[in-house]
Image 1 (cartoon, protein in one colour):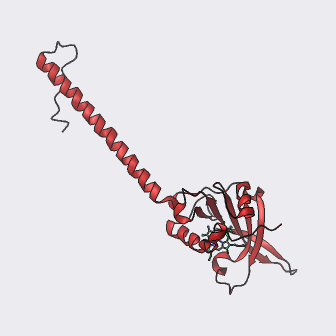
Image 2: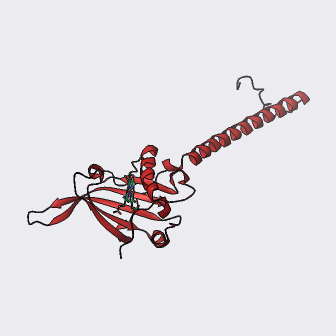
Image 3: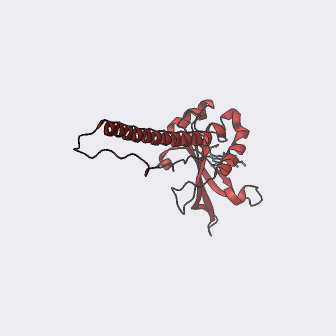
Length: 197
Ligand code: HEC
C-alpha cells in the first residue's frame, strides 16, 4: 500500500496544478493513515479497559507494607492436625486491620480502603514445654473496594509467601475460592473475625 502512494512533489519546485492536486492527495492520504492509526490505538485502549473492567479480581493487590504497626484485632490457633484447614492454615495467626477497617469492626460495614491482614506463622514446641511462633507461612490480605472487586463481594483477596514476599500469588480462581468461604459471613461484610478488646 505504501509503495502505491503518490509521491509528494520535490521541495523547492514550482508545483503545477496537477502537482498541487497530487500533493493534496498525498497529504490527505497521510492524514487518513494517521487518523486510522489513532483510531486503532483508541480501539486497543478501549478493549483493554473492557477486559480490565470485567476481570477486577485479577488486578494485583499490593503487599500491605507496615501492617505490623496496625491494630491487632485478634489471634487464633489451628494446632490440631485433624482440622480440615490444618494443611494450609495450621499454626498461629494474627489478624491486623488498618484504621479505615476499624469502622467495619464497629458497625459491620467496611468502607472502601479497608485492609485486613491474616498473618500465619508456624508453631514451635520448645523443650521446656512452652510453644513459640516459628517462621511465617503466608500473609493473606483482603482489600475493600466495592466497585473494583464487585465480582468477589466488594473485597479483593491476595496471598503472599516469604520466598518472594511482595509477589501476589493468587489466580482469579483461587481468589474466588477465598470469596466463596468468606461469603458465609456476608451479613458481616464477609469478615469472620471480631475485634477483641
Ligand atoms: C474455608 C473458609 C475460608 C477460606 C477458603 C478462606 N478463609 Fe479467610 N478466614 C476464614 C475464617 C474462619 C477467618 C477468621 C479467623 C479467626 O477469626 O481467627 C478468616 C480470616 C481471614 C482474614 C482476616 C479478616 C476476617 O475475615 O476475619 C483475611 C484477611 C483472610 N481470611 C483472607 C483470606 C484469603 C486471602 C483467602 C484465600 C487465599 C481466605 N481467607 C480463604 C475462613 C476462610
